[in-house]
Image (cartoon, rainbow, N blue to C red):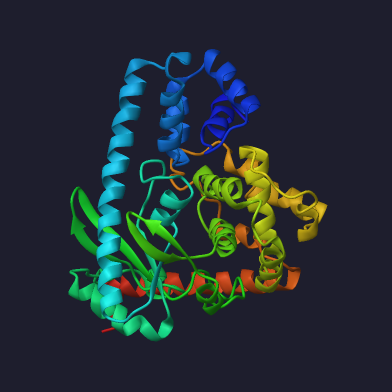
Length: 370
């Protein structure tokens, strides 16, 4: 791990021990490429955390004035953008409630408020709202009535997504808002858990001034671990898990978490998520928890190269904007050789179908097919 990456792992935390604080200060006082540090923070989508940490150290760190000014602008832009998203989310949830649709916001804004303590410390992309399958027609009608539209041709992946509609869009201040309407939180062909249990264990929290139904901390942890296994290699996703463990680790129902991970076939995904949060960000874990997830030494070596710290901080090619190895390699984060082999086949079939769909959309092919 390079110096800037080490600093990033120390700075992008919601909690630091006194020892970690001293180590961070010592590294920041040494020779440092501030532009490279910014680039790493940008790549891993943790600039708000990095900027807040550097600002909080005040006169103890001599960050270049231009760097500090850029960091301040980024923090302001993040807060403004996230406030816009929060306003839209509350509007949508209110409209769904008025239509008799139970809805649960997930990820994004919920994590910013409940794990980071406010809207300014976590970069957000879109809004994610979970409803029960039976409520989908009513929820879609609400979104259309509130001015949301969908792309005419959203593409193969969105049209065939296993647990949410093609994205909905609406103009907003400074751009547009993207909302994904979910009926599940993971593809059951990869992780075999239904969504109804999430509703039965749901909690409540104050989000942007409103009391909302959200996932329980245990289900949030499972969701974050599974979502990370199908997402780009970004430190931001590990930061979410570390923040949850710092806040709820002592009170989590670990027996439930382990049982659900076993039932879902997500023990490996949970192992990787917890290991990264502990090793890179100092997140607390119960003693002897990781061995109970039964990930063997050989598989751990493979995982290190495909989704561990080595992969997370590998040198990225110029065109590697997603920092994302082939998702085919990410099937290693599932449990069981037979299940992995089946999903490799299913993934290859899906890729072939996508290529055929794309080919048929080409003007020359459409003309040929009449």
